[in-house]
Image (cartoon, rainbow, N blue to C red; front, side, top):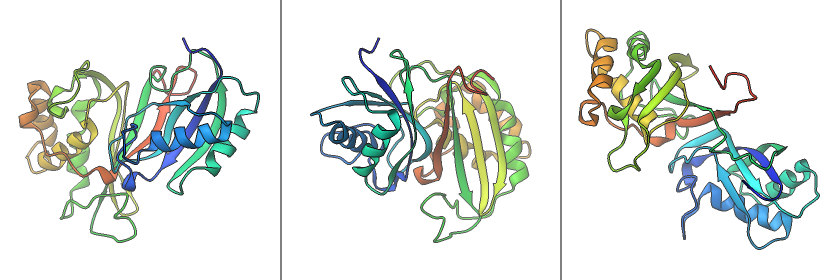
Length: 255
């Protein structure tokens, strides 16, 4: 259990110029920037900030959640957030700040995460930083059919990147759907946890399966195989965004 005061930040960032969330020596990361700015705001040498999702380099967030262990301060949570924001670069923004119980941990307390992945119909200079163009127009109906077998609890080993840290491959997926957004198609997915590169591999698999007579059957077959070699390519990180992290006291966390 944490000792001290725990502050919850909801954080949005453009991941383009970051080497991911997780702090790494000599590299620009979101966690590193938040810890530096929060330490300056609190007038201490070092603080610890834990994130709900360890996004990769180039991946964005609108609803990342971070927990800050801040012992010894009586400042209101909103003031801590505002002071921390002053020290952050333009591509990171704190969009919400709250006090949490001492046992709260952004990653360990989370019950579900929601990601989106955006595809472009065609290259677009205004959207290209936050969405990926597969090179040709896609059939949205076929993409939608490819998502049908994913709902429920399954072993998602077929969509886990090789060489990743060993974790439980069984995930409970409560949302998997394709829909239109203004410049193309968007995949929206919610699960209790995700494997390394899982969303990007699911998108790559959907793009491959759309060429089959029955995209749903092909994805179901790949899912059941638990074989990464049978699924699609890992698509570019820039189309991926962590939109929301859900906890037990929040709507949708247990669905």
